[in-house]
Amino acid sequence: MSRRSRWVLNKLAAKNPLSERIFESRKRDGENAPSGDIQRDWKHALKIARISDFRFHDLRHTSASHFAMNRGDLYALAEILGHSNPKITLDRYAHLSPEFVHAQSGVIDAMYANSLTNGHQMDTGRKTTPKEYR
Image 1 (cartoon, rainbow, N blue to C red):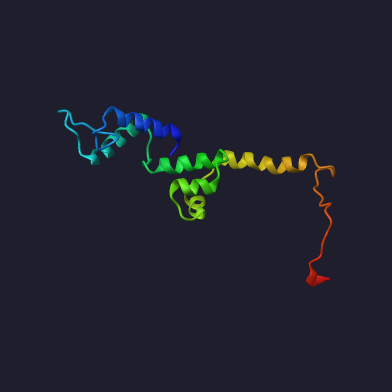
Image 2: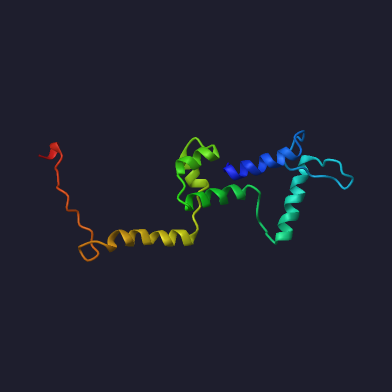
């Protein structure tokens, strides 16, 4: 969780320190609504925003993808998401936008742009042969 998110949640909790929930729904009579009613509010918010086919859990995927596209460390992301294996994070959560992937192809071009061999990279390092082939 980001520091800002933690700050916002602490601020909300400070408003009503005896509350059992961070986000409380209220019935029209002012009574607390059952916690299952958050689905109704979520669907209502999506309808107002004209967003369809979107689940609350999709926010986790979006956040992880933005983290990855902003050069966040994928091992740290796995830890943040609670995954025991970073491969799970890569396979399920670090979805990259097509624009980001296309922009990254420029990294390869830039690697060779300053080459002294007219765009061709040459390995000028000294070659060593493994002992078993000598």
